Length: 416
Ligand code: AMP
Ligand code: MG
Image 1 (cartoon, helix red, strand yellow):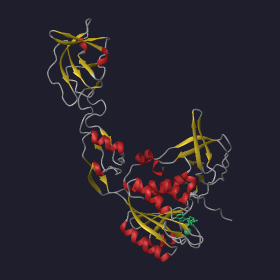
Image 2 (cartoon, rainbow, N blue to C red; image 1 turned 30 degrees about the vertical axis):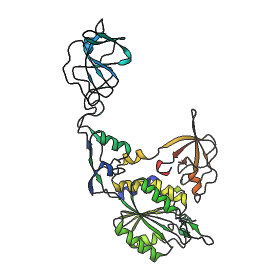
Image 3 (tube, protein in one colour; image 1 turned 45 degrees about the vertical axis):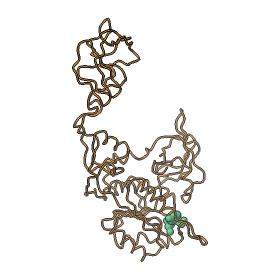
Image 4 (cartoon, rainbow, N blue to C red; image 1 turned 90 degrees about the horizontal axis):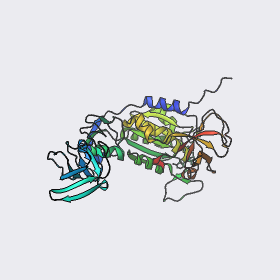
């Protein structure tokens, strides 16, 4: 008897998928206001040094360190306020009043805090007397100490989140080159599905996958095209796949991708496009399909709500990121890391598939522990809702005993 071929692992599936997905080509320039969640198409080189000038980190007085002597007296000859710099040259033994962020003129190199001086009113004007000996250069933020002029601050393929946008604003960059926003279609399939607001008949259930998938995609800045719901009918599926292939960059379906009599997704995909692979050794989410409909990527997710989310999270988002132009480094940085923990309770597991069991996580000074959330079927969306994350129990492991070392992944920010 011939041996059953080994199912591909998650990492094999991912690398196959990423190899097959082309990089984007269309680039447009957008203003910062329109750049949130877009992917940079060019490196950003700093047009400025940051800080742009030497400036004070404290409210106090700028002095020349070389003038510090026994008597510690400095004559106040002017002031430099944020937005109102002092531009005159310094005389020996002089100081100027400075506020936080104000320019420290080139002649001065050290700032003493106002709390550390005594003010003396004398006939020739005000003097300060230092209470302690300062350190040379203290409380001065040097020009270019954070970012140098000409430094690469963001890379092609970086996603523009709140902090990246803040950095661009810091540098006075008003427009950036970004890749085209991906258009992603979402479609649910299954004769048993009804939409919220409709009346259920016996054995039917509401379509929740599409709502979840759309919300995640919107959070990630994709343009979502909603193809609604379709019955388990190959003719109708084909019509919709055809339509989507000419309208969107990627189509995500859920349901109908397994081996049941009503599962037509794969056959239709193969008849009008290509299926690049089907099935991944993960639990839940095994019957995941990836392919293309012309230039449109195709991701077929299993219908069970947890399986749909896990395959979306572990496979589809990486594929979309690649198509959108996001670099691997930027994508990985946005995902929650797989981290070590110990099992607070036993986990039942069969060898052969990477297992994502929903867990609650406890973090203490002694380390991280994880335990199953209890009700944990792949049909139960609440198992994900009530979980802090999921296990990352390697494909070749069996049952896990209490206190065994395991790996876990906390829920990504786009699911919370
Ligand atoms: P399937 O992958 O089509 O075999 O579906 C597996 C299970 O997921 C079935 O119990 C379906 O009723 C359920 N299911 C399929 N699509 C959805 C959906 N859009 N929302 C919620 N549950 C679904
Ligand atoms: Mg079905």
